[in-house]
Length: 155
Image (cartoon, rainbow, N blue to C red):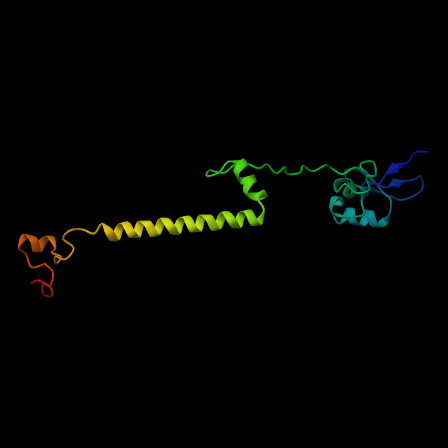
């Protein structure tokens, strides 16, 4: 028994079933049904019609052999050091307990405060000798009208 294939849908056409269309150039086409023949004559593309075998093959429908899905690569997170700190110091800071972190913070704050206080004391004790003299600009020193207390504009 010879089983043909439908030229449009790809279905099997058994003997004495379906339709045969013979074109003007004497090429014959076998169709499983009048529906297939009609769509063929309308010049429809079987790859765009969802129920045809060609469509199913193109869109990978009904393939039961390949049940295993493609394995996707997982991103592996790698920890690295940054410009200011190496990895060991970053991990040490991250794993430190909150109490230790708070104590270190307090120590840093007090250290900064004492340094600032010492700097201000040094500044206060080492004032310049001519601190009481009036300020004179460069032009005023040269004899121009730009000294301290000079009038508006100068012209």
